[in-house]
Length: 277
Length: 144
Image 1 (cartoon, rainbow over the protein chains, first blue to last red):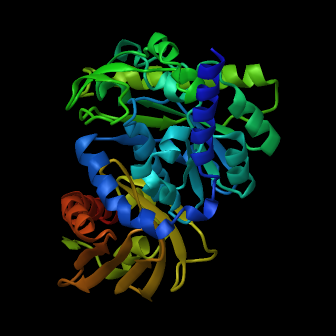
Image 2: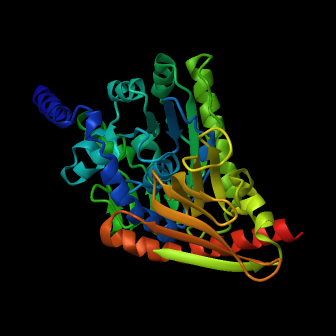
Image 3: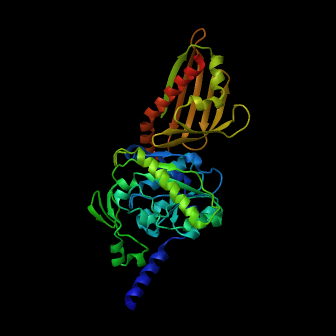
């Protein structure tokens, strides 16, 4: 057993060593400007996205944007919101998105760093916030993004309260960002946490889930590591009122979850059909 | 991409200019406006700046516009200094006694090469509709 533990530890260290330290200078506003038309077409024509309430985001101070996450490894809510934020405030306003370590080291996704994507860690987030930027985080991460499709309107951040501590330490407000539609881009059947434990991926890669879904073009899709072609589900995002971190962590966490859930419930009530919206 | 719409109003140029020469009236004039903020002080003049975002497709599109031409009761033109590259103009001309023709012109260009060109063309229909609605709102404001 010692041998197995050593191998797991070695593999984990190798992954961690490859996670790039956040270099905020890798964000490239001109590159983002070049990509906006393509993203705009994808968001407007394919996902028929609707983004509301951007005026609730404080315009002249750092802010921690906290969203509920959906869509497996191809989460449309992230890119739709990034597009909307960059269009509303201009590509000149520094804006960073925190992503899972594996996304940060994935060789074919290096271009994401030009959008301001950095590996999700308290150090990177603090670095970005202290530089005066807006930071988008999905605390539910790989846990929430693989929830079954029939729980698509349930906000479940998995009890991860680190973002509250981060907001408190950097004295920035939290702005909840509620979205619906992402979990309808494939038929997600379950998180497969038992499979993650069986394969010991939870220890090696910090992966709590090995999701099982039915998705294009694979049919039955296990892990979703190669991504999938998302169905053209209508994505609706609504920014909620900012929350100042003035009370204890658990109370703020509960307030953020309640705000997100209320927003999701409101948006879900407008939907008549899955995918179509 | 250049989009242009025109309307002839049963009122004189000075009356039309009272609305078009006062950008504070624009939120009631321009449809699908997501954000309108005056970023410079004082009345409108060459150099005045406004943050203008219209909802085109799924998201707000626009940026900071600066007035580059302010010729009373004749022309008001602006360019975008951030966001989508854009040049806009309200052009007022006599159309007979007590009548004015107003032309609303918008030329814009997205970055991104071929994708930018395609996006511009796709957006043109909605932009055209927005210009037409703006002119109808203007007609309602000055003729009612």
